[in-house]
Length: 138
Image 1: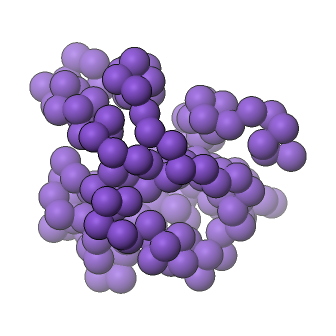
Image 2 (image 1 turned 30 degrees about the horizontal axis):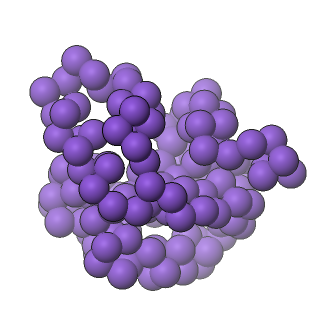
């Protein structure tokens, strides 16, 4: 059965001109792009989106990073989308990411790791709704 997930190309990859290559990798991995938009997060949006991490020592740096430039947000669909996206992205720390993954190819370090993907169905639903309306996802 088809599943939807959320993904975001982060400011480091957008500013480096890697968004097209990353989108190509996602399509080659069998993802269908349902909705796609380039935008820029405000500080308030970044704080809200990453609120789950607000007690963590990296939170302030994460908010600063995520507001430093444009991002590309997308709704993706395929069978087993959440797990498959996490496989295609690679480990959060690119030093530990498998060869051929997005983070191995494009990420510079654990903080600037070029892409985000939802980690569970509930998270995917919340994150999709954060950036897309119901009409966007028809």
